[in-house]
Amino acid sequence: MRRWNLDALFRQSAKAIGCGLVRRGMSPDAAGDIVQDAFVRLMTASTNDPQDARQDDRPEGYLAMVARNLALDAARRERIAPFASVSPEALALAADPEPSSERRLADRQRLALAMAALDELPERTRRAFELNRMQGLTLAEVGRELGLSTSRAGALVKEAYSHLRSRTAAGA
View 1 (cartoon, rainbow, N blue to C red):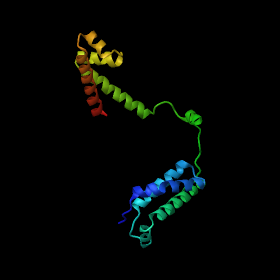
View 2 (view 1 turned 90 degrees about the horizontal axis):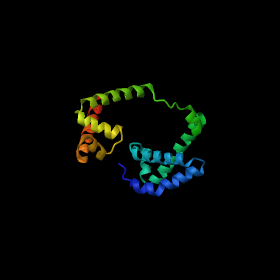
View 3 (view 1 turned 180 degrees about the horizontal axis):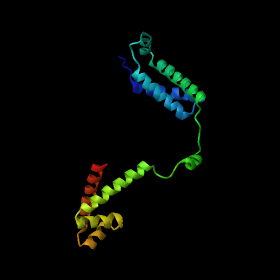
């Protein structure tokens, strides 16, 4: 089994390999992806192949060879099926701003669960939650409205949250 110090090898070699790929015309992002893929290949390389045995001596050379081969493969893929660059403006025009029907259905179901959970709460707890979260009152204002201390109003809102979370998570 190989005993390479991958951390040290990465520090020594990754930047140089990436710069070499950029000099050959690859974008910095693509070069970074290739370098990472090369390290993944290095980490998972099999030592069962007799030809791989020589790689134990020079992991830097093996890494450079793997990166070069991955870059060649990427260039071949690009020639066969080039990546079409789309401007953010064009993408915004093509994207559907509406949620999918599945998303709408899931949201409706979750809302129904939340409404049912609110109905299960004691009146004062539900009212404290509604005043705080739906009408935007502070906990002090909720406390004054319901004749409670601020800390008790906060405890009721927290209790409502816990109940809603448990009920909506159970039904999700």
